[in-house]
Length: 246
Image (cartoon, rainbow, N blue to C red):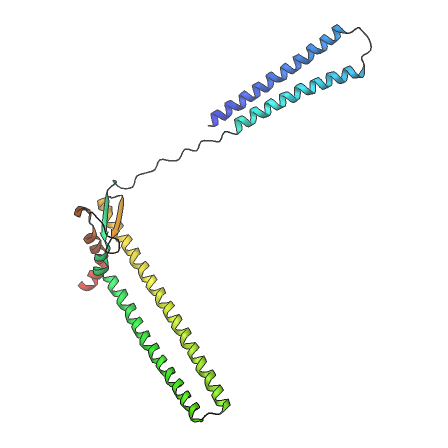
């Protein structure tokens, strides 16, 4: 592409020189013709102006031609050749059964059991707080019905119950949000370890694609020889196997 640009620049320069020479020759011929046709006398200013206008016209044409040549050559963009795409793997496909991973990967059990236990603990805690609040509300209503509370005491009790109810709702929402964040972090941790294990197992298979399937996304037809689930599970559970041996 650089060679083409250099050739175009050289061509433009040659054309410019040729146009310049042609303009000079045409002007000289016109001057000689005017000298031969007219009698010898004082040149009028109008004759000089006419020659001047003719020269300017030729120069303008030359500039236009150079302008067109320049932008015709410069408008061609360099053809960017993309580097060849390097193939990853041998083009084959392997797959992993996610139902088996969820059932037999020990980290899944540890994380989900821990989160489920925390969820159950907080559920019991909020149920107790909710029950205590309901008892306070019932006691307030009884006192109001029996006339044991003054107007000021009733107003204070209502404000206190409303504040406690609002705190309970806020605490519950924060607890749910925290649990959801922990579940998301656990899923990401499992996904990262699964990707790493699949990469290690596939290093021996050299497949181009590793797919997952399960009950939520079943595979219609599957070649058993392409199933690497057991090998991936062995890789995933290696750290836990070592701990058990100790």
